[in-house]
Length: 357
Image (cartoon, rainbow, N blue to C red; front, side, top):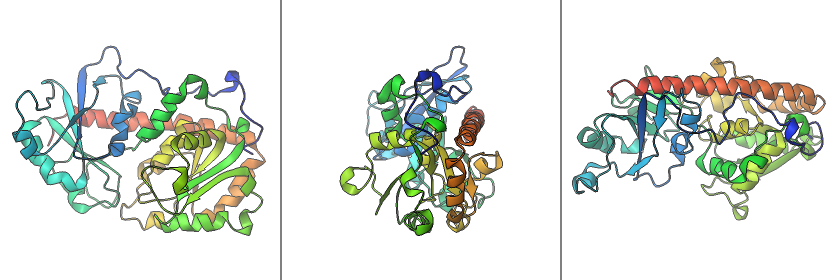
């Protein structure tokens, strides 16, 4: 498997610079509070996971204290009909950001100008880099970076998904030891839905081919026919608890391009000590969000970046026979991740402290 038998005791767990899942959300000696307004008219807040999970606070400078998120219908006609007491308020001296889906841009700008004038806007879910939302002068922050735009809003990382992070919390400290790769029972996992990009179809074909025959028993392979928002065994997916366990038990996580090359899986894998493997293949280079993983690549991300999935079998065979090399790579990836996330959140905090456009 990942270079050895089952799990070890607490003494063998990794200790490194990635902040613990239960790191306090507020720092002593902070200089400002931050209110995050979640647009209630977004039916599910998964895209706002960076804030909902406290990831932004975990990797923040400690100079800002993130209050609990405020849920509000960010739509002017709704807000107009509320009494002063009913209307959500942002405390006067707080820094503030409003999260919303890109198709709500016009409504949110009108509402912000009328009721939340000190709030920055953060556009979420624009996986294919829609020109209008990306280049609107009212927007300070966006999800999903792209080199296709001149001077776009500052892109923020996805971080781990809210339901994944809730499960990590629920499992508690005893289950949250990060085992070295050499103590993980399986070498890799391939847990994804087909049809969200050609890259996934190519990877699924490779995993079923003769070229991969000797590796199949070393991994956890769970490929569903279609994507679903709530994964269940009935739809051919792992449940969230099964998914968390799978990432903990495997040294490598295959992360093929989906609707966007950047996906929650990359962050989730590293958070629990599994090393992502990504192919910068045709699906990546032809994506409408050009250079979607540019920040990771340019910062020297040490996890494997393949030119195509054809390179995967030889890479996995190499680490199957050298678990200490996998342990070394795991430490490098975790160290890089802590620095990378702190750097990106610091840029966010600096921009947040300036007046909104």
